[in-house]
Length: 206
Image (tube, rainbow, N blue to C red):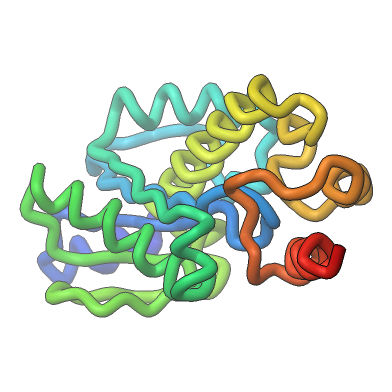
């Protein structure tokens, strides 16, 4: 599939500055949800760019460096505390909107492509199912989001090595759940998520 398909159609319709947006971190028990937003130049080329989850970490990091040097981009971050307050779906939308608005302060964007997310904006928005594998602009945003969030998890791993954040990035793996049960909750856990909620309730019951 031509990853420029949707962008080319929009260029034909007269749109110029198309933002792609995607998030990383809907599923983890720990940490924020992070969204990337990107506008690519029309002559942008990056062989092999696709959904960030399908790329090796090494390739993602290389692509991140290239994308951040050759595009207009931004990130939006919504904390675990706010995820608990407004739910992960709304928090993902908010992170995307923050990132989009940062870009719109730099340039007059006129269209947004999202990875299956409806956004309430004053410019047209097209949600694409599996958009990060269909649109090069969304794919670039997915790399920005994933690498940004992973870097945050590596920093946390240095602060709390016993939790193993560098390995699981906050997702509910067996080892993560074992560490969580052994060491208990620290600030940054999503208290409304099942396994965390159980531990919190057990701590209160003591």
